[in-house]
Length: 354
Length: 236
Image (cartoon, rainbow over all chains, first blue to last red; front, side, top):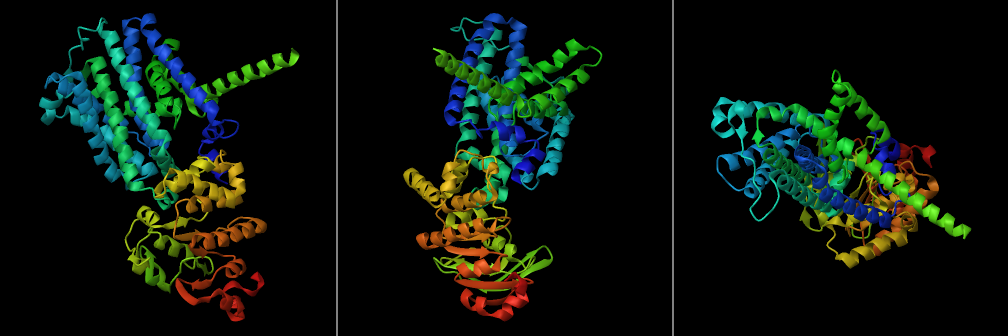
């Protein structure tokens, strides 16, 4: 019966993929180590291949990935939907921009400040959100996404936010001891922040806390009966997820060197949601794929058809849902599994003929 | 120990003046027709819905204590339809059960192995997702998961629901063993009256939110009047 329920919710992909049949822990660990090595290699090689603007785009995709890591903890793990996460990104971006441009604080401090403030805002939002679930929570976060850009434009806050003009930053320069240009420096910052984010989300997701969050998603009543403080975790995960969004937003602000209310529309929030589903709900590596999807697929679609880019985008999205119901991360996982299986069976076959 | 418990959903009064006590290592079964308020009683006792009256657990009043806190005090609820976490593996479900256990890492492993010794089938399937288990295995898992939290009182809501009779008998047999091994108090809500009365020490019968009969299950079982009026003679 539970299986049928999950199929209804379209979760069957996850069910098939996540350590159910034939997926033993040893293989999973091997896959994780292999994936990490490939990622590190790719991250080191990219700057040699890509030019300035392309490297900037990759950095921007990485900043989205940081946000997605947090949104995934909230939606993928705990099952709380947010269609207003762009608002937390906006808060992070503005805090960082304000700190750098108006207070003249160092970049590291600005990013940390954005994280702390977003964490607090997320907690504050999580408390009233506790009363809502499902569709109601979605509507409540929707409100957040539509009202914040207007608040940022408001006359009253112009000294803080710069109103419609936003805040412009100077391009961050690498320290003198580092012989790289500014684009590469920003790319390195992006990679480091994402790496830290990965490490944190990974540890949160698979340990005691991750299990408690999954339990809340699956069956809140039973989770409480196991001694999980459901309210506490729900509020905390809102805060943590907002903190990730804050880091992503702050990073984005440093990359673009400009923040304006119109960069944080409802469309950004929806795109983020698309990002975690396409990347892979409940999968840490999915955030990376999601980040690249958000940034590159719209422009790829525009290259395919200048007249109807969103039709192409939509077709691509639907195709992906059919091909990778458990997200790109799941697809890559299955592909990896298949390759290993082929290699193993070929080896055993060749040994058999000798 | 429950005395004078009242509970309601909004304006609808569900339970009225419920009184009973359960000792350590004793099993009390709560019988009654559909809608009598059996599940409501368990939900009130595990802090999921508010109630009036007084309930004490090992000498401490538990009114207004939230569910997760009660779980840490040793009251564990095995909800109707088992409530196993379908997407987690058997092993992970058991680890979640031990979340609020005060045992150290080694003792937790021993607790887990003890569950596996009661239910060997769970060990065979420890890496499998709980959602892919059969109904009976999920019920075993739900009991096992409750057990690793080292409870003092286990609230069980219709463990026989939707299960084949042989499996129900198997599960109940183990339940009585567990109860004796761990000096566990059990409050068992059950539709399947014959079996429940066989195993339980005491029984209460609820009808329309009130206790109409209570006493040792032997006596209730022997009382043909009660059988006819509340369970219908054909159930026997």
